Image 1 (cartoon, rainbow, N blue to C red):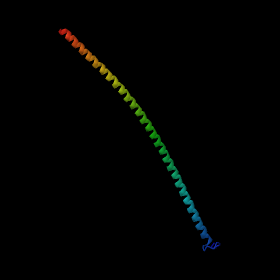
Image 2 (cartoon, helix red, strand yellow; image 1 turned 30 degrees about the vertical axis):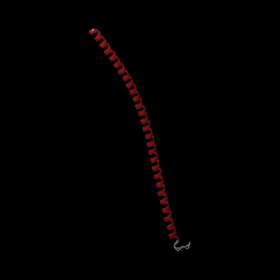
Image 3 (cartoon, helix red, strand yellow; image 1 turned 120 degrees about the vertical axis):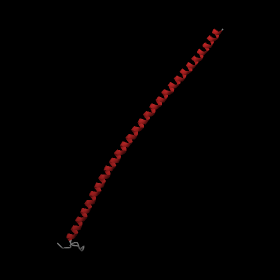
Image 4 (tube, rainbow, N blue to C red; image 1 turned 60 degrees about the vertical axis):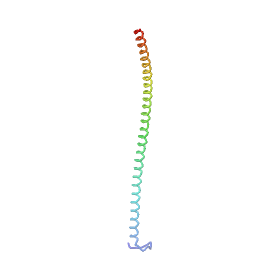
Length: 113
């Protein structure tokens, strides 16, 4: 068939071949676009999951640090109280030692007399 019914200067079978080639190219490009869109969605989902995991890990670490901070603050308070008690004990013992020394001096003086 060499007829040129559409008067474009090419015979109609050549026009059909060009049209099929263009349709195949369009289909190929659509397939590539769909493949890229699918890949992009998968990458976005992966990034979203990674971000969610990072956020969860970050919040978990923050909670852990806050708990450790509270524990340390409680330990510091305990140490302060223990230190205060020991300071009071030392003061009482020092007073007792002074009192004992005074008694010894009194007894020594009485003995010497």
